[in-house]
Amino acid sequence: MKPRTIIGIIFIVASLLKLATIWGIIHWSWFANVTESPWATYFYIFVVLYVGVNLIINSYRRDPDQWLQRPLPIGEDGKRICCSVHYGGDEYVYHGETFHGARLDAFCGGIRLDLREAVITEDEEIDIHTFCGGIELFVPTHVNVVVKSRSFIGGVGNHNTHTADPQAPTLHIVASNFFGGVNVKN
Image 1 (tube, rainbow, N blue to C red):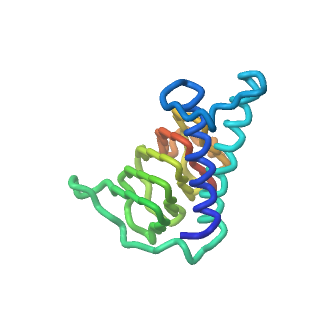
Image 2 (cartoon, rainbow, N blue to C red):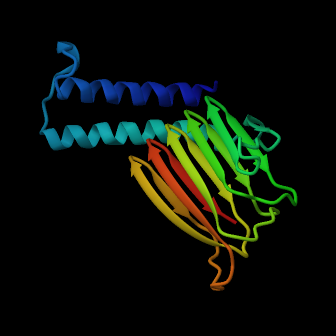
Image 3 (cartoon, rainbow, N blue to C red):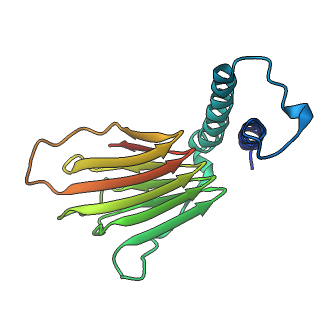
């Protein structure tokens, strides 16, 4: 684990402990000194959380050697892939295989899924769940992308070029992020 990742985890844990102290879940008198308005305190906690999550995500994005290229993990139905990462980074690349949807779970880590060379002939769904992690999706230019997201201190960035063809297949990305994010690009 990189020092940047460890510092990010420390920032997240410290801000969550401060929140728990403010809300009365834990009682640490040395950690409960609030000299400013409650809104300013929440703002500072949010900033520390944001910095911690960004430190973790960027520590994996900037180092290409962190991504372990793995074979496509086909799920129980024989078609849809199921990827789960804890404290690391995995990369899955399609080289002409047919894509039939995916379930991606990232817990304090990252997943990079490259679909640029995948064969996509019909509408497919990518179900994403992140907790203190990130997912990077590379999609082909000939498909439409529809994003539905439920995020808490995180989000989805859709930076791909849009296809105007209504007959083109559509990738439906359904993302649930908790201190994490998804980046979609070509």
